[in-house]
Image (cartoon, rainbow, N blue to C red; front, side):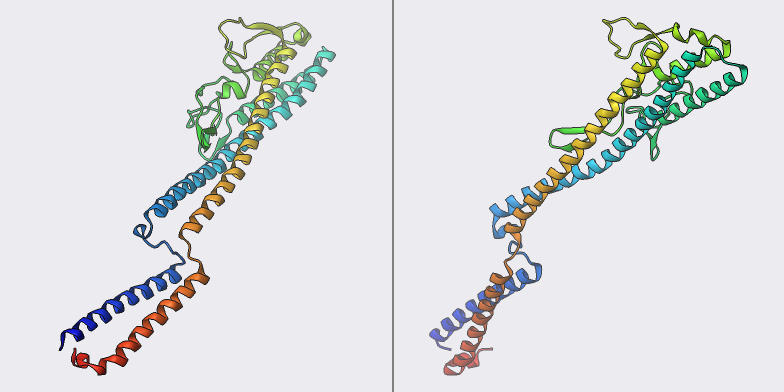
Length: 316
């Protein structure tokens, strides 16, 4: 074989490999739908896409956390709402008793049963669980936060979860605050009032409803001494505390819902950016594929046409 023939063969083989690689590349782009197949294709764009994917993963985790937190928040809100409703009914009953003063034995038994059942119901709601976890015991989730007498045995520290960058919300709650525990007795204040009423019914001294008092401290502020107030006023203070925290939970739910929408919008934005970096333009990819295919076929045709014009036909 002459030197020019060998050189010509090398050139043909070189272009054969190049066209084959081009065709394979375009085939991979079409089959995968991606124009960025390997980080080495474009290191800068690959790094950008990786950064956006990490942000997307974080946003997805935030929204999963929001779904978890909303379950806890909505369950807590429902429990407090139930306590508020039955307590408002009980308040009307207390006012009625205060105006009546004297009751007979049968009425006393009926009233006692009513208040004892009410007490048990309120404490039961205060010990609400989600799955196997008590939600009003703070970080202490495996034991009842409230004893049968309404005293608190949970923790004041709460568990929280991240729902956006720099934003966390509750997954458990400090029962001392949310249920209006009287720091003077460590008991739910409205339950403490109910206990006093039951005691007065047993003693037959319901007329003292208008005069008996309770030492109340709902702030645990060492600079302030407990305030001695009448039963109905104490009941109102305890009920108002629970209503205050029901409102706080409602605000937390609204915040979580708004952040989920924002997180989803940001996730879609970053997903679009990743798509622009990685995804193939099918119209352009098909055109490039046809171009590469035509070029490869032309090269093969050239080899076929010229191989008989020189000693190339003897090359195996």
